[in-house]
Image (tube, rainbow, N blue to C red; front, side):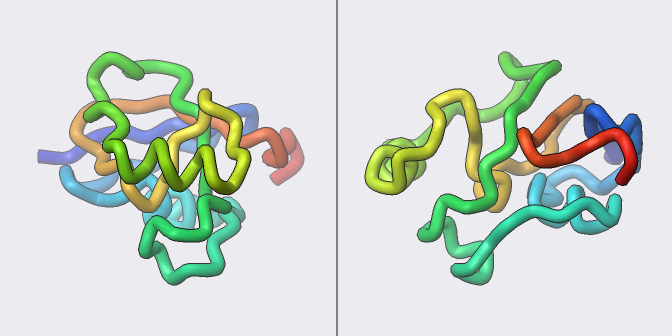
Length: 100
């Protein structure tokens, strides 16, 4: 199965296989996402906000919540290295602009 991921505000869209991490999807769309831990879910720099289909995404684990709290990450953001694409999604990051 494949799913569409739309990135706002750029409007870019890509289709990825089910189980692709949101971090990988953003990088495939040539959008910058910070990460210094090698996608191990430790640095909490890869936070993205899910705008559409929030209810269809697996909930935060206690580990993800703890990592976000320890790193003072906005609770609305999800660690993109930990979120797997299992449905069509629309996401954003505060630092993505229209000109990307």
